[in-house]
Every structure is written in C-alpha cells, then in structure tokens.
Length: 253
Image 1: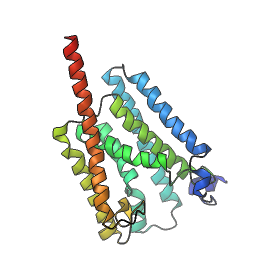
Image 2: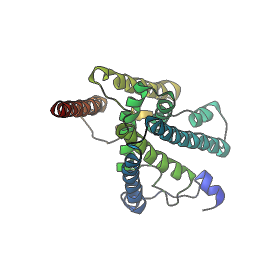
Image 3: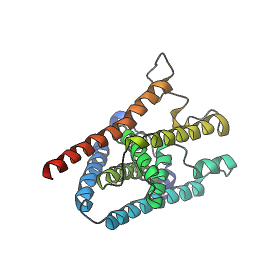
Image 4: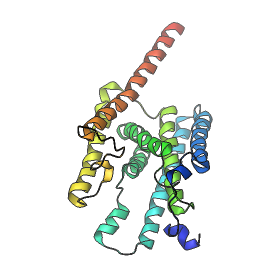
C-alpha cells in the first residue's frame, strides 16, 4: 500500500466477513477495549473529580483531533467539490458519527443531560461495531480511514464505560424522558437527511432493516420497543444499585 493509498483508501480490497469477523484484528480490538475499560477505571476510580475531568478532556480532545483530521483528509482527496459532497464530508451523517459529537459536546459542556444520552447512545453504537464491525476491519490493509473508524469506535466504547464507572453518568427515573427525547431528535435528523435533503439515502437505517428480519409489521416499531427497553435498563439498574447502597448505609449506621 502506497502513501497515497494509505490516505485515500484506494487499492484496498474488501475482505469477506468470514476473513475478518472475530479474526486476529477483531479479537485484538475487543481485548484492547476491555483492558482499557478495566485499567483506566482502576487507575482513576479513587482520583479526585478534577483528575477524572481532565481525563475526560483528554479523551474528548482525541475525538476532536480525529474528527477534524478525517474531514480535512476527505476534503483533500475528494474528486469534486459540490455543495452536496462537501456537506456529506463535514456533517455527521451516521449514528456512530453523531454519537461521537454528542460525546465531545457532553464532555466539554459538562451537561448531565447529554452525558446520559452519550452513554446510552454511545454504547449502543459502539457495541454494534465491536460485535460485528462493518467498517474499519473489513479491508486488507489498515488505511487511515480504517484506523480512524476502528479507533474511534473502540475509544467511544471505552469513554462511555468510563463515564459510568467514574461517576459522571447519573440515571434518575424522573429524567428518563431526556434520552428518549434525544433519540427522537437524532432520528428526526436522520429522517430529514433521508427524505428531504438527500432523498433516497438511508442514514440511521430509516429506510431498510439493517438486520433484514423480514417482519410482518414495520421494523421501526419493533426496534423502537427494543430501544425503549434498552434505555429503561440503564435507569432500572441504577435504581437497584442506589437501593443496595441505601440499605448498606442503613446497616452500617
């Protein structure tokens, strides 16, 4: 692979799923994500809030670097510069890309509202990649695009986990409407892209069932129900943990 190919991802054939799914690179990515989650939690769990916040700023800065660098590279290697092509390069169009920017904004604004959504949405997007990567690991060579995609998904998962284990995410049942509203806005943005701005596109999987379940009813309804149950799980587990902590305090009092 030449220097030019590294940046443009040209002459980089796709691999059949059987060659990369849970292959060496995939296993390394999974192991590295798990190790980073455990190691960084142990290293920072008992540190001051200021130190934990600095860690988040560093992680947020890494995301900003990769997001800006990837867009600069894509602008440089673009074949044409139409309004449509430039907008597609600059705007976050897919769920994973949107969630990266939600993470960035949540970290630097310290918004509890966005932090909770970043954790819930971020884990959903990154887990989907880690379980079955559709980009990044599916090429013969690890070009810049492949490294960017793999690294940001992995780091996104680690960051979302750290937001939980280091105490930044706080899930209170009375505020469960917040991530639901955020998901509604995000999918509304996807609908705007698919049906108005870029008619015929399929951002956020609003036109075609990504799992191909061939359901007798619109797959959106089933996925919406699963999504609501998924969101509820965070708040229910948090409620259980709070109850257990409360009982433990009562016994030691």
